[in-house]
Image 1 (cartoon, rainbow, N blue to C red):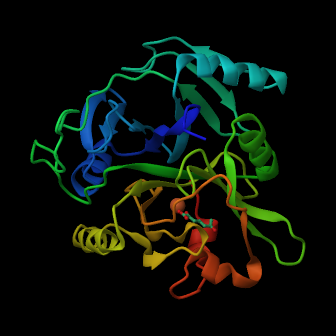
Image 2 (cartoon, helix red, strand yellow):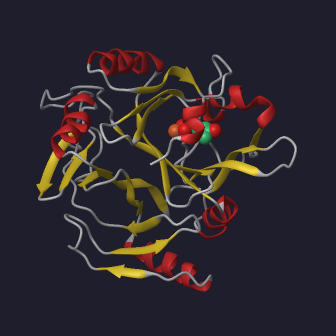
Length: 309
Ligand code: M3P
Ligand code: FE
């Protein structure tokens, strides 16, 4: 199916505790471009994203995620999604255009795992500096810096009823159920990976005892060599590393996990396979938990499984 419904995770709002440290981490070190500042918020875009911003940082007293917003192809798509949600007795809130900066109207609801999720169709576009006509391949402003991520890739959330989220995303939102991690004995789903695109995942859920938890926001890189280069930068700036360069079994992405100054986990991710809707759901079980999570040393990490914000 051509992508004409839900397009991508277009905006994530992450809570941070120190504005200047967060500005340095997401700006100088990760290489996102700061596009707007409010009293308690910083707005960033990655260099190859056209929309005004994809990352919002809200300064407060605890880390975690305020909301995740998916961009939808058309305004009519919002009505369609609202009708579907109401058909399943979800409470849907309307947010008028302009309430969120540079943004058209939004609808908001709560996931079965307690996370706040939004859909929007319009956001002012800034472009990627190259324009749309004979655009070239490298941004024109010369300001490619830090880890140089071209875009927000996917989000991983934690909560209890990930089965209900799986049902919601596949039945109502037309996502593909791309991969899962199950308990080898009970067959209980421990993690589910969902795609609305050709990516191996746009969102994933991991089973956790506490709802509304944030596992990580992942930023795309082009290839595994860029992931190793990112590791050099993360080390140079003394960014706390959760898991150094490795490759996921699930999604096959080259990865590094690390923490922002407030303890929120970030990931850089490259080279996952191309997903198509006719590919069967891939299943990993806990007998291969190490290889499912980190295939190069097939060793599960405790912090990776237990630290969420
Ligand atoms: C990723 C990824 C788990 C695996 C997570 C994988 C929670 O974050 O980007 O592929 O088992
Ligand atoms: Fe990830």
